[in-house]
Image (tube, rainbow, N blue to C red; front, side, top):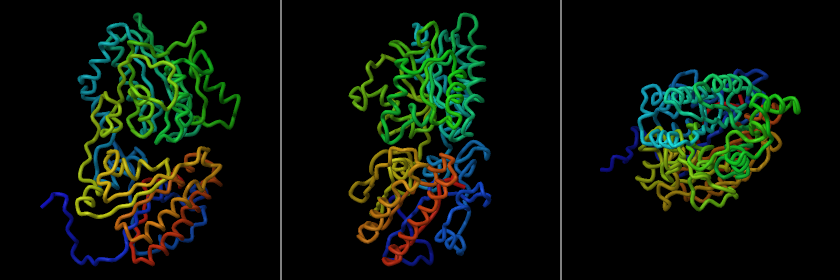
Amino acid sequence: MSDLSLKALAGYNSFPGPVLTVIMDGVGLGPKDESDGVAMAYTPMLDDLLKGDLVRPLKAHGLAVGLPTDDDMGNSEVGHNALGAGRIFPQGAKLVNEAITDGTIFEGESWQAIQQRVEQGGTLHFIGLVSDGNVHSHVEQLNMMLTRCSDEGFAKVRVHGLLDGRDVTPKSGLEYFAPLEEKLTALSVDGKDYCLASGGGRMIVTMDRYEADWTIVEKGWKAHVLGIGRRFSSGCEAIQTYYDEDPELMDQYMDSFVIEREGRAVGTIEDGDAVILFNFRGDRAIEFSRAFDDDLFTAFDRVRRPDVFYAGLMQYDGDAKIPAHYLVEPPAIDKTLGEYLCAEGVTTFAIAETQKFGHVTYFWNGNKSGYINEELEKYVEIESDKITFDLRPWMKAAEITDQLITAIQSGKYKNIRVNYANGDMVGHTGVPVSVRIAVETVDLMLRRLLPALSKVQGVAVITADHGNAD
């Protein structure tokens, strides 16, 4: 008997229709006051469902989903890992903290290769999100690695920092970049030269995901690698200037900037250098890693591809081996729900728009790309709008629901899962009226889906991966 076989629970009664799992991304249980976009929205279907007997609150943060402490908020990656695996695995931040604390991060082949580049005169470049949001990165991990570089006598280090304003407060960039630049200055002693080299807001510089908009990666490549961008004497000067020019600007949408000395960019990436992408989360790190690693890269004109040793803090896609080199081993997630269903011959349909497609496939399947069994599964991606989501808060929910209803009515699939991205993606914009519309859109989709599911005698499991719109 296979160790992936499933046994029916006592008292289980079969039913003809499919099991439909609806992940209302970012729709959490909040304080139910005017700050709570879910409570303020008109949601008659969700309200009725929450009055039923089959309702339980779930924790989607902290220790309950494998994060280091209960002070760490959840996110879509962690949530979908937990939903797809059905159990808790130590997640990126925790693994990295342990590796830095016990020193194993500095004992592997990748760190040794970085040391060799530096010893031969190369510069070490750190690229990543500068915040303590602990979703994609944590600035203290960067600080500890910078201290290690100094202790080992690395002569020249450059940091290419991205502003957050998404997993932390919207205009907190100076709170992170001011102490970072102070630390870099303090480390620049005994002939060492450490400084900030470039930066920009995460949503328009470097951190695209699921190939939604390669121009974001290209803008990052130009700033970090080529030194092309608006010039400033420091990161704090750049941030304050952008704030002054547009008081409504949020950090995540800040344009790129490049730091210069005597009219020259201080941190272009050159042959012989080493590069560390210090984000630990995979979805917004894969494309930039491909720009360094792929020999046949065609997404945009790189102009030049420097001969560097490139490493991710972790390997962001284990199946595709992206990147080829990394500092910390990713969690090994096995025996996912998808593996069990495929082993039992259960057919599956999974759908989401681009922003969350990887979550119902890659993350759900334990950080593995592609199909588990293409004969039994069908994955559908609906292309997301290329516009700030507060301006189109309904996103692609209607198009997703159209295909879901067709899948339900077809009778082909026993297991169906969907992610509605609205609550999370619009929640991140912080625009109250748009957030309410986003939540109401999801409620409307439930009002379309559940009658169609009832007609075929199916069962719905309605949940969320974490909160945000609340």
